[in-house]
Image (cartoon, rainbow, N blue to C red; front, side):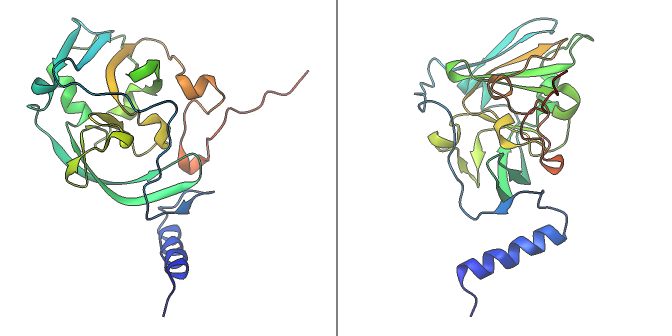
Length: 207
């Protein structure tokens, strides 16, 4: 009879053989909680999501308005820079590229800066955000997000390490220039591709 550890290692090897486990990662069946700072309070009467920057007109949604936007459900693998990977996770929310149809971008918009509670930011190229599996997610596994996983709203960008999937999302800034976010300014890699092991910024040699 397989022990839990043996079963996990077996499943991990299956994912590795299938090309789904990035280098340096290990499978987890749990959903570890990692974030900087306290969990923010949520008041649906005052919460808003704002879009600004390189847009024709700034716009914002209340929670009641946002939850009327059509949603999709995706199943995706997620990978944390700390070394765990969780497979076949299920998320629901508006698809990001569909959300863009609710306002007009300027041609100069090339980057998206996610703004979350307590001043946290994460930066991503607009072209990455247009993938089919990028969501503004407010449900996980068929239920509203729990507070520790970003309730009421978070980004989900499966093709990047999960710090890019900012929790407690409050704004989306569209920018002509890249603007490194909270963890990027602290030394994390600006791109964050798990399959390239882009965990930290490359060291610059001394002259």
